[in-house]
Amino acid sequence: LKRLVVNFMDNMTFGKYIPGNSIIHRLDPRLKICAVFIFLISVFFDAGFIGYGILAIYVLLCSLVSKIKLSHILKAIKPMVFMMLFLMIFNIFLMKTGDVIIKIGSISIYSGALIQTAYIFIRLVLIITLTTLMTSTTKPLELTLAIESLLNPLKRFHFPVHELAMMISIALRFIPDLLDEAKRIMKAQASRGADFNEGSFMEKIKSIISLIIPLFISAFQRAEELANAMESRNYNPEATRTKYKVLTWTHLDTLSMLITLGVCCGVIIMSFM
Image 1: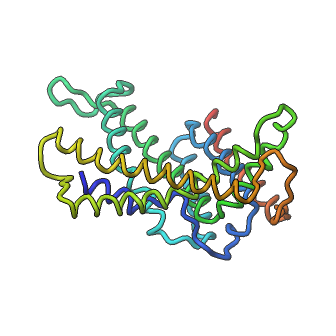
Image 2: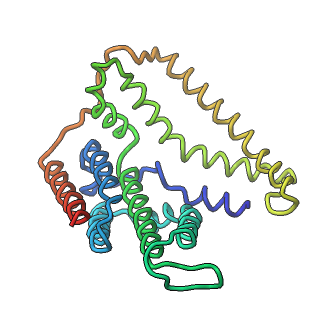
């Protein structure tokens, strides 16, 4: 159990920005969010293995252009392997579409179940890879500005756009810090005799509680310190604000959006054919 938790925290790369000067780094963050959103829609259309192959080539080219190491992307996929295997096994034994390929006693495995399982695996890998590329090549502040800019039309309906964007930015910023804090607490608890591997089920639950409670306390303390710091600087979410960094849309962003729309719309059309 301890190894599983430590492995998850060590391989958690979502929210970690990697400095760089690639084309993907220089793209407008609004484009990246829209591209990921369009990609998420297209990836759930059943376009067959050819369609998913096209999407995989698109993601591969994005990763090569971004110059993000393959090891960083694999670290993002690794914590999700257990969930992916669980979903695959769940679908293989419960879905009953297509022809029977393997029959073991009263258990039958169908061809449709294998195909749908492969689709699920491919979808999860593509989604995790592209979202990891977005957070790895975009600063949290830029994500905040992009979300606020995209939601600006909702201000007419008195929707708290700036507050929502600020909360998302803070959440993304503190994910790596909370993971580091969890590792520190685990080491401190282990030095005091807490055992996350041995003992009965109830003892393991108590060990996990000894990790969760200090982590929650630390998170609330960080939130209070951040709130006090913002209040001491006279932060007012309702005030008219100026921006230190202004987002600019370039011809490269337009070209990238057209490529993304072309690839995703092509895959969606293939799903109906």
